[in-house]
Amino acid sequence: MNDRDLLAEQFEHERPQLRRIAYRMLGTLDEADDAVQEAWLRLSRTDGSAVDNLGAWLTTVVSRVCLDMLRSRRSRREEFVGSWMPEPIVAVDGAPTPEEEALIADGVGLALYIVLETLAPAERLAFVLHDMFAMPFDEVAPIVGRSPEAARQLASRARRRVQGAHPEPDVALAEQKRVVDAFLAAAREGDFDALLEMLDPDVTLRVDAGPDSPLAREPIVGAEAVLAEAKRFSALAPYSRPAIVNGVAGAVIGRPDGTVYSVVALTIANGRINAIDFVVDPAKLVRVRPQIVSAPPGPERQ
Image (cartoon, helix red, strand yellow):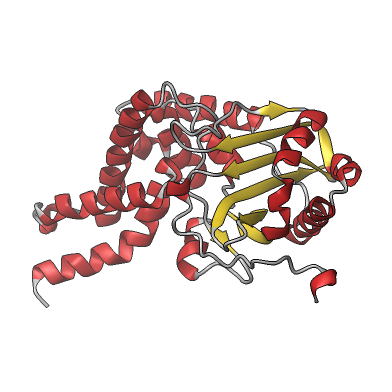
């Protein structure tokens, strides 16, 4: 094996971890893969023998590439309407693939990504590297171009934002699934009283419809307002299937022709749904496997 082949083998060993970091930072698989590929290109132009710790070197490169991409994206999103969400990792009728499982292993759901997107790029990077990947601040500091104490402060500010705005599910996945099943059943039956009972009084509904979409809207807060919005889409309820979305219970909503219309993740706490997050942007749904049936699986059709 020549030196370049050895370097490529070592890079492939690091790729899953690099991809996890990039997905946490950027939220889309294409951008994450672009960041990882850029790290390989830079490595291939570098004397590998001069790199003492390849994993740390690659983490630094990927992190800085992500930081630049975030800054560029932030400047383009000033007029974005609605809530920006990541490209969802979805499993229907089974567990995620090993590759998908690696990406969602930390249980970072859509709701947390929405909060991460509100952070300044350097805050997000410090939080991701330290709080999600346990990187010491003396290693985070040179990546964000700050002192270790300043990097600590960045992560601390981000942590306060996350803890203040991110609702944590307080029940096991099995209970989350039970609530989602009941929610979908009530929606199919048009039982809006039952739907209202499942909603926390201060529930928030958020939508990422993509740029310039007529479906784009600011978050809707309050059980009655959210229920009124849900009624608008009740015709699609028969074409919904329970799913695991970034590690939490949710659903894939289809159209009568079997194509995917939306992915939704629910945050369930204190026995009720307190956040409903819809990804409608077609660009973020291209990898969702279209396993939607053209008729609902309810008892009346069995």
